[in-house]
Length: 407
Image (cartoon, rainbow, N blue to C red; front, side, top):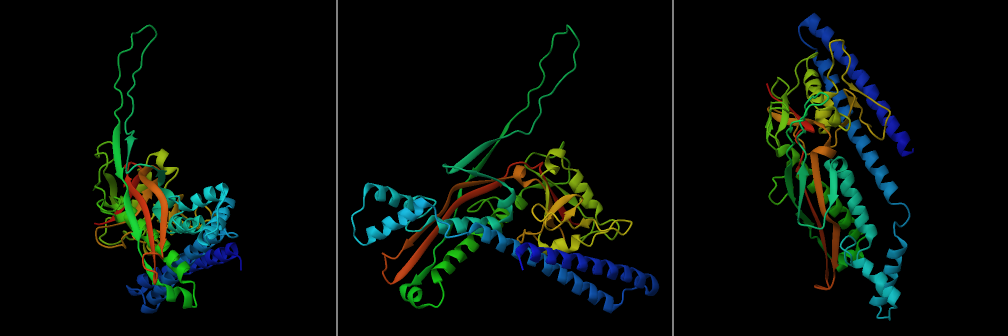
């Protein structure tokens, strides 16, 4: 079964599950009207369907990640330059004389992105794996830098204007003010080791497993840092900034507007549950709605999928656009349930956001992934030192809104 066929089947299954959930909810309403409560069998059926939906969402995520990895790893993934560098390296290790061209080729292996004695194919896989599993990185603005600290302008004002008439002398109007942000680059690292005997005798490719684990660790580190980082040794996470209930015209810059659901730890009862989502989405200026997404984890997504309007229609709608919105839309805005580090729904939790992360959050990369493979310091042990220097911060507080599960 091809990836597209598999994703299509999973989406079909999800649609069927949603249809079953809709039928069970209608049955639950009828039972409540008749008996004053919902029968235990119906409740159990609804719970089972909800678990199926959550599992299907996760399965679609895994298939998409696998498909992305396949696209990135066609052939051996090596450029002509890297093949030449590897050949030169082998000659060097055997003590053979290198030509000027081979000396030049060998130097490509020791660049900061390629690492030392590690081909660019390895770091390329790591970088792609990080991107696939770090949802903020997929949608935020990413800038490469050669500095330890990055500063930028905040254009958060407008020039004022005035009307005039023919022949009048124009008076000076107010000029907008600019602000400035500063983002410091942090260091993410992993330092695993393995004995030479393990590498030689194991039935599995231990080195590939170590590289893969480093990629997964970096991806999780970034996913957490860009959402919940404290800004000290980590990036400042988007969900840790100051919040307020006031609108753009009165709220302090750097403070994100949030909207209360009206219920502690949940949405309001049907048909009012989705109204808060309308308020949050429509509070965004048009320039931000065009590139907006709904961000949440998959458990919150399962709850959002159940919201209905006064006519019994579900606010969440599926879509066949597998590229831009494989998980459907809410109010015409794509849903991304990949933010696993976001809080589950609980009292006072900030468990959803809507906004344009490309304008809201800035990521700065000092360099790619650096890999040093050391089997010299201790001949019986191989050590891998993986490092990545990156940072991030919220730079436009008007481009995103939070949903707070609070009365």
